[in-house]
Amino acid sequence: MSKALFSSKPPGRRSGQQVFVLREDPGGSGDFFVLLVDSVHHDGLTLPGGSAEQNELPHLAARRHLETQTGLVLPLRTILTIDYSPAAELPESLDFVYAGGVVTSRQAGAVRPHQPPQDIRALHWAPQAKLHRVMTDDQYRRVEDAWDAWEHGAGLPLLVRGVPVPVG
Image (cartoon, rainbow, N blue to C red; front, side):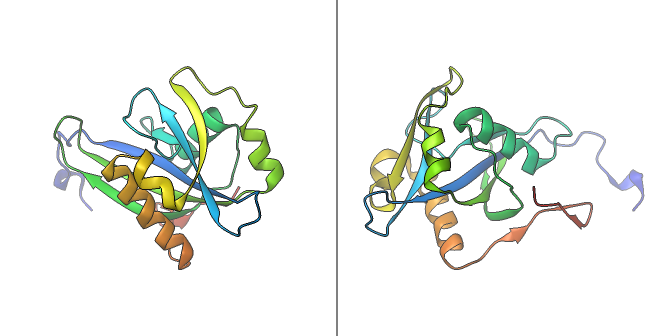
């Protein structure tokens, strides 16, 4: 494609990367709990994540935020959902939610002693039934859609210039 067809002033758009991480209920109910962060930048709890920097591969941005905020390092390749937010109070954004999978009890236990950055007040494991009470409506809908995709084995592989990103 000719470079002349590209806009010389592309729109400013934020690319958000979030990670959907689950653990089994340690109480043995068989239910799953999702990992959420309490950030000073958002009302309510959100999935771990943040913006990608310029020229940062999106899955690596998600992995960086997940590790910084929670201490978990997980392979991320599958996108469960994409959420578009038009420009209103914040810049226009595309938010990608990656499948972090189900962590082991040992991995989940490592989250508790992890010291998150100052902009994260706390980390929480929340059951699906309580998500609506602890999240804003838009964040809740995003997580519910990701949960539905995860339960049904749906998801999109992330490609970079047409090549699937390696897992790991």
